[in-house]
Length: 265
Image (cartoon, rainbow, N blue to C red; front, side, top):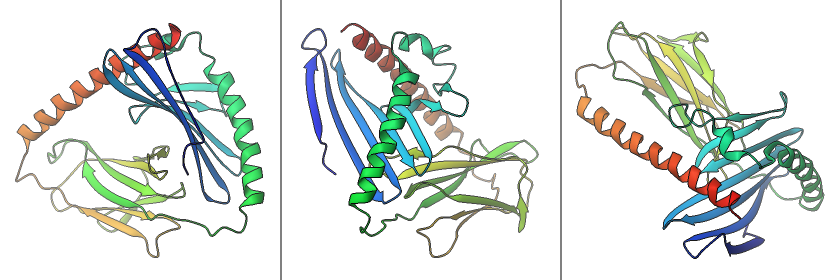
């Protein structure tokens, strides 16, 4: 859907500008996603903040993203705000949100999402269901060394609606110990992505698999991984590590600039 609200104004001067847009999508009769985007330019550096509200049946998700990276979400079961900014970037991210009623606003959004969903369901009840099948990839978190603990990540992307089932095997046998599944996260195209990880100790000859099940798949999707230490890629790991570090530092700096600009209104 096209944005139905778009506004822009200056915070303090011409070098600080925020453009707000709000859009919604309803690809299934039981799911509504509202996205509020703020496109910000602070000191000539463009950033994007996305406020996401999603509701499906009786489940509601509210989260903030900065440049497509989640920085916090609401845990309504525990009545709490969960910050997902890495500790080495910011020890106490709640400080930069002081004066902003995050949880109170989220509760209002939760109620509003349910109301809007009910109206849209009644108006679009005859629309066909839309689904997008997932893509998955299986890879180790660290350089593989036999006998040393590692983690396998099964990254599942571009699926709709949210909700997948991920299962693991080792040498053909089901594995449940050491398995974790992340929350699902929205993509810009209104699809979702999710991670499943398996802690393991690689041994020669082992074969691991990750199987994904989703409503849009005719058959389960399986990815297979075998440990291979014959081609270490230390140089690439160092390069990627430096790139990620620089990116995270820019990420943290952008958050601080954005919040300062917001509070300076």
